[in-house]
Image (cartoon, rainbow, N blue to C red; front, top):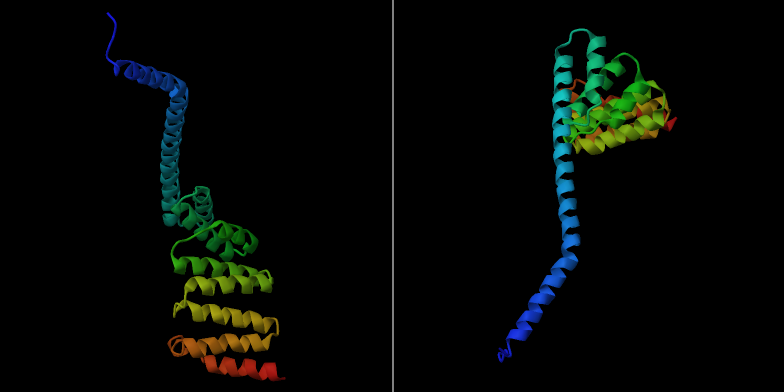
Length: 216
């Protein structure tokens, strides 16, 4: 029977067009789904590996924390430091401290360079210890650069910043840059006036000494 309905043919054509388009993009959609699935698998694997690394780092650093033998403790911290985790970063700092105490300043700097911290005081401590390492290596310019970074990280902490400024002042005196030494002490007097009394240090005496040396 002849189809006299004028709306049927357009509907049939639209359905045929839809099927054709579906077939056309089926491969692309399939590829997209596979790609998404692959990303999810990668994320899952990364998460599991990360959790494994965290567990290993936590275990190693826990053993190091209670170890009485300094040499063994250092090796355990070094082992924990190989894991890119928060515990791994603490292990790097702990290893650097023990290397510094043992006079291994260059190796300590390597661990400190690889360590990071979100806490501003810990970050300032990393840079301060790095500066101390460079002082012992007699690399005074590098020491001053590290101390400047430490001051920036400390963000005007009233306990830590004056200590770093004194370290800078000592380096400047070693370099015979007495004007810069005086400025470092002057910052303590101006911005941290109570520090000297609290630390039982006569900051003004050191400031006047630096000024006198600069005037000669």
